[in-house]
Length: 158
Image 1 (cartoon, rainbow, N blue to C red):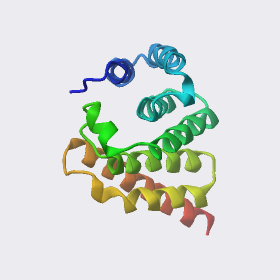
Image 2: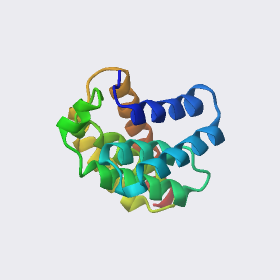
Image 3: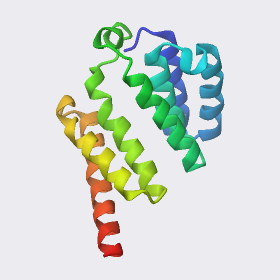
């Protein structure tokens, strides 16, 4: 359970999106939080998690990619101490597989299969930081699905 109020509010937005199917309401909440934290100048943990969540509610893949890139850039500024302080049950290393998975998926949608494969490889390289819990299984399953899609794309273009 997070002790960080901003993280709790981001969690409310995630619940709106994933739990209730209220994508636009989640996007509106995320936009308000983004303004409150000072955008990219905010706390890197807030920027990372918020941008990662905001990417999921975008209708345009270019906007989704932009938010995913912001999330990755912010992750590079994080420390395990800051993540633990907020009550997040992952290490910084545990964030990267999901961040790279999302980037790989964006690049796949855009037809940039080389970049998609690069981020898939980076996600797989960090998978050891995840546990064998529901979250770890979710990310691993996403990586497997993406790998299959990219393999099918390679065969289709051969």
